[in-house]
Length: 292
Image (cartoon, rainbow, N blue to C red; front, top):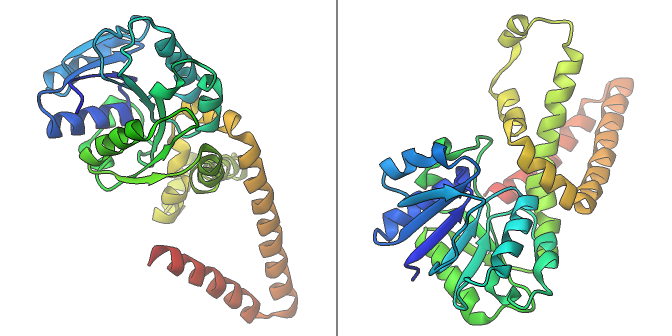
């Protein structure tokens, strides 16, 4: 499929792709590019990478596939520089792993080589960041959203689809607008809720010592706040570039919070337990529908 691959940004996702790709296609030559290439030599020792180099010295010669796995604003600059590179092969393809698609496509769509870029988003990861936390299992069974644009051709989309399937991913193809709207509620919004919950928790308990709070923290709180540990660098880009969709979801959420606040007040005022029970039952049914 691809004999020479460049992974730009060997973090959690980039590292996981490298691990799975080498597992499935041992003869592929993978070069990893990073801000601090000296930190990537463990990947060579582990056998998942063949070469490392600085992200400021990307060599396009003979590369069949570029995988850009950096924060979104950085990805935009890198993709544009790759398309501008005279050494980029006409048959080479560039994919990304970013959580926002329309901004990236808008930035390259007028480029004469725009057809060589195919937007991708692996719906995988964790609150951890960095190559150290990369693993094969992150990609296994994960959905990858492919967002073709008007200058892509069907053959290239088919090639990229096969690439992700090789890595044991499931594929969904949609447009960038739909992607950004959907992930605003399924990915970006949950991160913000987790972050705000963490912020609120510290504000409420600012007078308490951490050691005094620990006995009251159970698995539920840890599950709800886990996402707040995500990379600030990555999430700042995501929220900035998908702000319109995220704000729309937040407005709906604020309304929902006010509604549940009103239900609690009414239940308390009238000593009506059934008001709350009906609410929780309604939401439970929705939960079952999406987790069946």
